[in-house]
Amino acid sequence: MAQELHYNDFGSWIKAKLPFKVQKISINAGFTCPNRDGRISYGGCTFCDNSTFSPAYCSNNKSIKEQLQEGKMFFSKKYPEMKYLAYFQAYTNTYESVDTLKFKYEQALSVEDVVGIVIGTRPDCIDESLLQYLQQLGRERFVLIEYGIESTNETTLKRINRGHTYQCSKDIVQLTHDYGILTGGHVILGLPGEDRNSMLKQADDISRLPLDLLKIHQLQIITGTEMAREYQEHPFHLFNVEEYIELLAEYITRLNPTITLDRFVSQSPENKLIAPRWGLKNYQFTNLFNNYLQQKGIYQGQKYCSFEHINS
Ligand code: SF4
Image (cartoon, rainbow, N blue to C red; front, side, top):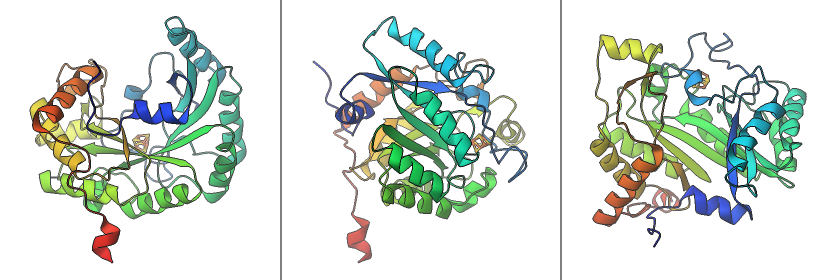
């Protein structure tokens, strides 16, 4: 018998949105990032090594269509009836003129069985003309924008060279939601300088945002990044699995129960990962986490307070 989940899970959420089995296919659409090309900085976020979040089929030497066809071939052997979401994942997928963006998104949507797009981007790299277009597109196809929020703490955002503020994340999440576009956020737990209290406060901050989806990741130190250098020079604490599960459980008790949780861990390639090395696959971690929530009787939103009520 399937285990009852103690939080809103992505699988059930997407099932309610789309009447078929869907799989995201990550693509690299050849964008860059203003935090790497010099518009904001050349260094990038200190934790970032973009190559760690692109699977092998996702190379920008290949066209968007080719990448999607290859992704489809991989998944359709097992599930011929599968439909797909093109996941614009690598770098900043709204960092171009609106005409170029439209061309790339529509190229993806022209591939057979691709029923929607997921667009990963920075909160400071999107304007209203693009939101207007995506609002229109979202009336016919599945459209989700995922913003890298990373932290709600302004000091942390500076320390990791994020190049935008939390205020910027708040504003764009609100605006995207006001346009009626599905809105996701991504945060990292364990960033240097953040203690347990500040990470739990983050859950309260995130709960005030009109987010449909949230991805939560543990901090990973990746070879060649600025953070790897910082970690090697002045090591800071990284979670072991048990600590992370305990913190994450407490975090979700404070989360707004209307938000759906997309994932809880990041899994970087073994050859790139310095620490922490948990040796767990995504599903293995999720099983451990689900068992912990069951044993402790912990649910998403148990300790959530409505801030509208508190602030009024
Ligand atoms: S995490 Fe995103 S915004 Fe930061 S440097 Fe990497 S690609 Fe750019």
